[in-house]
Amino acid sequence: MLKVVLAALNSQYVHSSLAPWCLRAGIMAYGQGEYEVQVVEGTVNEPLAEVAARVVAASPDVLGLCCYIWNIEAVKDLLPVVRTALPECVIVLGGPEVSFCAEETLKSIPEANYLIAGEGELPLARLLDALEGQGAPHEVPGLCCRKETGFHADSAYVHEMLPPSPYCPEYFDQLSGRIAYIEASRGCPFTCAFCLSGRREGRPRFVPLERVYDEIAALAHSGAKTIKFVDRTFNVNRNRADAILNHIADKAASFPPGITFHFEIAGDILATSTLEIIAAAPAGLFQFEIGLQSMSEATLSRVRRNTDMTKLKRNVRELIQCGRAHVHLDLIAGLTGEDLPTFIRGFDEAYQLGPHALQLGFLKLIPGSAMREEPNSYPCAYDPAPPYTVISTPWMSAEDLDTLKTAEKALDKLHNSGRFYRTLKYLTRRLGLSPFGVFLRLGQAIARAEEKQPRPLSLDQLTACTLDTLQAFLPEHAATLRDLMLLDRLASVPSSVLPPCLKARDPRFFETKRLLAARYPRTPGVTRAMGFLTAGGMSRVAFCDYADKNPVTGRYPVRIINLSVIKCRLTTHKIYVSLKIYEGITKSSKAHNRKNDMIR
Image (cartoon, rainbow, N blue to C red; front, side, top):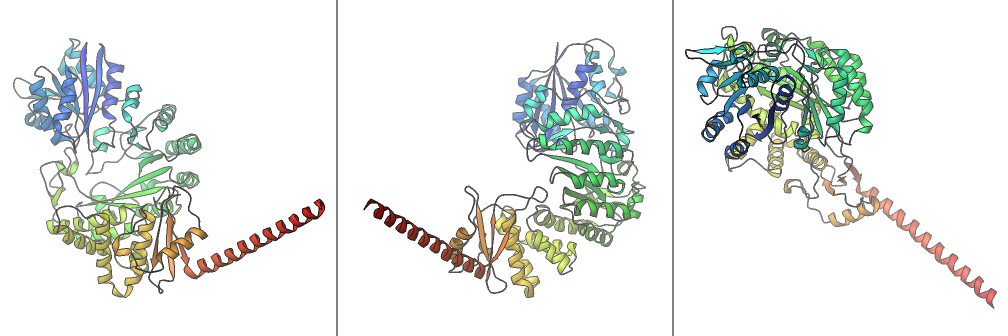
C-alpha cells in the first residue's frame, strides 16, 4: 500500500487549506488501488525544518505539494531538505502557481518528479495507479514530467463534473476553529487578463445544492467562525446564489452565534432579489468582497473585464446602506491605460461609496494570465520573483506606484482597521477633502515616524501621529478632531485606558466617573472607558461599555452625556431615595407604636 502525504503551506495559521482534502477525496473516489493518505499543513511563517520534520516523520512513498503564489518560494526551500531525508520518495507538484509554467518549474525544482497542471483530483489518482503498475504515467491527464530528451507536458486538466466532497472526519479534527472554505462552483464566465480563473477553470460547474446545504451545516457546527465560499463569482447564477443565501438565512438561528459567511461577488450583476435577501438577513451573517479593480470603464475594457459602472455603483451603495453585511471593495493599481490622476479619481469615487474596507492592491503578473503572456498588449515591468508585483507601466511610473503604496499603508491602518471611522468621515464628507489626499498625507507622516524606530508604530503611537498630523494640517478644527478621535478610540478598542494624546487632564475625572457609575450602572464583568470632550469647554463626557459590538462594523456604541444632566439627575435621584427612606422609617415607627398600644 502506497503511503501518500498531501502537504500545504498556508500564508497564516488562521487559514486552513481545502486543496489537499479535495485531492484526498479524489484519490479515494478515483484510485484503483488502496492508498494510505495523510494531510500535513504548515505555514510559510514557521521554520521550514519543522514542516520538513512532520513530512519526513510520515515516511511517504509519494509527496504531493499544493503550490500558490504565496508559498512557492517556501516550497522550493523545503524540497531539498525532504529529498535528502527521503531519497526514494516520489514528489508531485500541483496548483495554480505551477500549472502554466510546467517546464520552467521542473527545471528550477529538480527535486520534483512530476507536475500536475490544472485540477488534480482525477489526475493524481491516475498517477498513483500508474506508479502501482496500473497504466502509464504519460497517459495521466494534465501530467508534466521530464523525458530522456526534453519534457512531456500535457495541458491543464479540467473536470467535466466536480469531484466528491472533500469533507471527512479527519478534516474536521484538524480545523480547530480556523477559517473554513467551501466550494459551491468552479470556473468563471469572465476572461479578465490579470486573472487565471477564466482560463484555468473553464466554464462554471456547480455543486448540487443539496450537497452544498449539507456542507454548510457541517462547517457551521465545526467551530469555525468564518466560512468562505471560494467561488470566483458567487452570484454568476442568480437563482443559485439566492437559494444558498436564503438557506443560510433560514438556518441562521440554528447556527452557533457569531458565525459569518463570506462571498466574492460581481457588483454590476447583483440582483434586486439578492439584495432583498441580504437586507432581511441577521446583521453580520454575510460578508461580501467585490472586485471593482478600477472605476474606469475604459481601463476595465482594456483588461477584458466589461462592467456596467452605473449599475455597479448603485448596487454597491444599496448593499452597504442596508447595513446588514460587511462589504469589502478591491482596487488594482497598475492596470493597462490607467495613470496616477485617473487612479486617484477612481479611488476617491470608490471610497465615497462607503465600504467597510477598501483594498488598494497592486497588479500581479501571474504565470498563465494574459497580461503575463501578451506583453505587447499589456506592457509593464514586474518583479520576476513571486508575487510578480508590477514595478512600472507606460502610464504609471515607479514613483507613482510608491505614492500609492504610501497612501495604502495609511488606508489599511486607519480605515480598513475600522478604528477611525468618525474622524475619516468628518474629513472626507463634512470638510470635503479628497480621501486619497488624506491617506497620502497621513501615510507620509506614518512613514516618517517609523523611520525613527526599528518597529511599526503601536496603536497609541499611530493615534498620536494621526492626531498631530491632522491638527497641524487643520488647526481650526483641532478640538473637533481630537474629540472625534476620542470617540473612535472608545468605539473600537475595548480598553479602560486611553492613549496619552487623548487624555484630558481634569480634576473632575474621579467625581464624573463616580456619577456615571451611579447614574448608568455598569454590567458586572464589562469593561468601561470614558473621556472628556474638549470642544465646548469640557462640558460633556463620552463613555463606552464594551458589550453589544456591532457585528457588521465591529464598533461598540458610545454615549455622550452632558455633565450638568448627570448631576441634575443624580441629585433628583438622591432626593427621591431620601424621601422613600424617610417614609419607610415613619411608617415603621407608626406601626411599632400601634403594636405597643395593643400590648398595653
